Image (cartoon, rainbow, N blue to C red; front, side, top):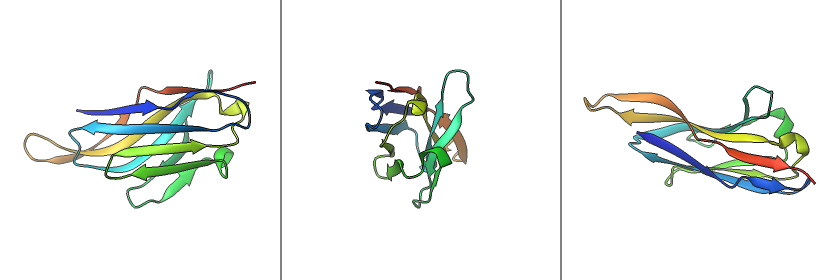
Length: 124
């Protein structure tokens, strides 16, 4: 019913930048919070940053001052600008969204969705 499609991952040298994008599509009534998570090999998935529908943001301490999350409400898209990248930022980055959808009986429910993930590798 709802798909999240990420783009923008890749290989970058330490100190470099990347911009991730995630577009939501499907039977969307509205989207509340959108965010980015990441999972490095052998580690648990962790929150990187998220943003509410009114623009309130939340960042992991490890990325504060380096990453910026932004959102285009009209396009159902969230972005993550990653600057001053470090090798420890290497991980699969996943988009996540809390989406209100309208069921066939007219009921509006809130469901959580994940993207397929995009690899970010920081290495010289």
